[in-house]
Length: 384
Image 1 (cartoon, rainbow, N blue to C red):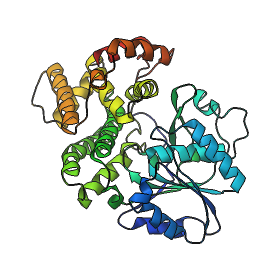
Image 2 (cartoon, rainbow, N blue to C red):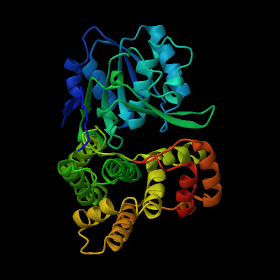
Image 3 (cartoon, helix red, strand yellow):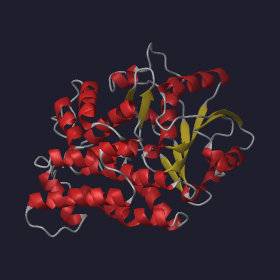
Image 4 (cartoon, helix red, strand yellow):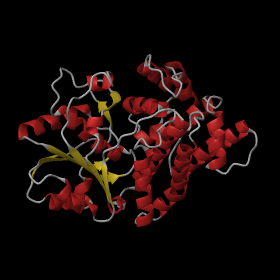
């Protein structure tokens, strides 16, 4: 097991009626900015619950955060927060709204010349302070409710980048599974696939003498495989929705990454597909992951064959054949959830995508061994 340091200050408040806890979680004297997306929280009752719990606190609203949250919208929200003297942010929505709120929290007190440097010089240019914020999660998928990562798109340059800082952990996140009952099936599907791939990227690299972390990841895989179809068949089953919500949080609260190598190449290539072609985040992941596995099977053979045996129950002594079965069963699971896995399913020419995304990646080196170059990424997209 590799050396590691783990820190996570986010308070999770989970269960039915949990939104009412905002009354004790948000400071009584706070001037709050309520941040949300396209307005679904006003249709599903979340908005009314939030406003009731906030009571007499001064509230400024900023709606319209995009599914791939735009840097430009975050700049606008930060300017409004400064103008209104806001001192606490509250995200009400899915991972996109939470990610946007993280950036807004860093932008409001930011004094540098160019905030986009938080992304292009990630880890070098860092915020020195941030507004406190909490989250009311309505769409389990990204794990953003319990991590310090924000993924943001910039319309002007068609970039999708991430930054992270310990200053942008949510102070708290409220998870009420009942608010997910009204989600459209496509969003349920996307959340399950997103969670699945998050876990893959912290597990399916190479052995690191970390049996506990392996078993923890495998538990999330098995649970998603068992519970995912139930959520689509029975949208108002509380137990199923609660389980999936908690899986999504564990998928990227960084616990699974402790002491092990990670490979987020699927996400990074997927981000470029989203930025260039507008694919929904989870759609891009389902396209890239199987192709990446097929191309890099030799490098990932030990973990792929372990994944085949422990997760998919493959009874095959030959590691290569076991790995092949693991890939095909994962693809079949995605298809069973209604998720396409080929570029052609979205009308995208693979050769063109390979050329464009290779150029966009430039000199970045991805993967657990930093050997997924732009040329390798191009081959992955041709495979896709």
